[in-house]
Length: 214
Length: 115
Length: 118
Image (tube, rainbow over all chains, first blue to last red; front, side, top):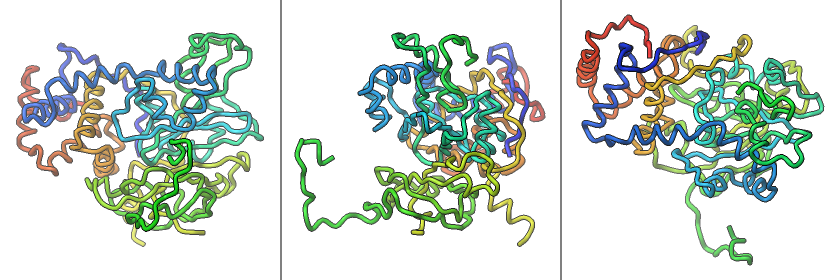
């Protein structure tokens, strides 16, 4: 039971700090694999560069476009991965992407109770809480209580649909477009879409409250 | 895929498909998740075992059993995963939320039985 | 049924439905070594050396105590070491010697009681 609740703020990985045991292990594994030509010398650096371009901002842009472009939205819902590959977003794993649209009658929430499956090619690396016991234990059992902890109240007549990722499918929630955003540019709309809205724990932000954290 | 050419293409006759190529279940089917306890690795959480579900969609294409993959097997018979729906009230005794609240989860074909 | 069966039947990494407290909104800036560890995982999968599923199983195999006490990427790197040994890509001896060499660059033998600082 991964219950480590310490707010783990590691020391910066500079030449000054003495690397800890696991960091030494990581370095040793990596260097041996490169020395033995199992992986190429520059591949880690290249992969880090790829990873750095995958952040929630990417997801926000996708959501904003889906809000303004019904044809894009339809294609996205029909085949998430293929549609995003057309935009140049390559997937480095053998995964599929399913986009889950929130409607007036359905609110989607994503969790991985077995590990930490997450649409990393779109959103980057997940927040710690997504990978820790409380969320993973309770999202499938009492989603409404979990959402309430995030400040999200879903009316009883709206169905909550919890997707537990167990296979090759990754999920991105397409939140509902907030009211009062008619005529907004895609950039303005993207600013309303937080990472947490694409996990499904919050709604997209209202126009007046643009400064929602994350 | 038969619509790509803008006209319907009849499948050829006398084709025998590979084992597992044809999905055993279809969207709408009532199924039950098997009860068994694989040692060492599984991808079917214990909280859904033995529960009744409805198939929402067949996941294409057929793929390797991820429980085998965990031990390095990446060849062999491919079967389908199914996105299934289970009401939360079916999963948790005394579920306090809306009766419409549900789980969606992908399960490999060998874990499903017709219900 | 013996007391210990449940330890085998339920993986230490499976959380669904367990009793748990409130969600603590913990986030942290990923350390460079953690990102490198993730990059390594991606490469091992792309090169078809260690699949994502093998990595999951490797983490599960660490057992209850290590799953609870090691942080996320600490679990990954130990799991990778074990898997690479099983696949005969690395040996325990070569990795241990390499770790000594790496640790020595920073001025001392590794202290295995030191919690990871990076």
